[in-house]
Image (cartoon, rainbow, N blue to C red; front, side):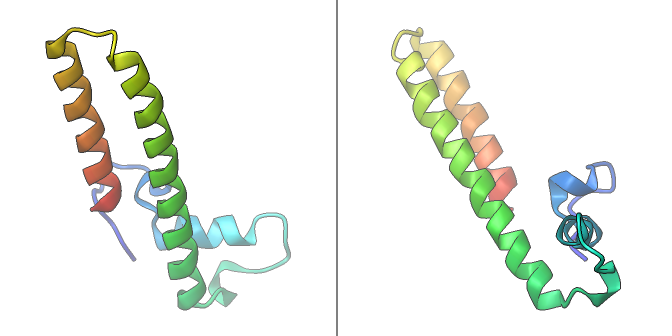
Length: 89
């Protein structure tokens, strides 16, 4: 199981149990019947999707940032980099 922090919800750190529950949602499957390879593939898909959403928000924010002061632009850049590092960690 991948646990990044004990204080982060399972959906944020994409724990095995969260992914298994996600894969079983709306089916008669049991979490114990989901192979680990499928869990890992789903985790990769979710991480990619989250990164794409972050990039879209970054592009939108950069358009807005062009109207911000230099200090505000730097603060926004730091925030975006921190979120990307969290997703890629």
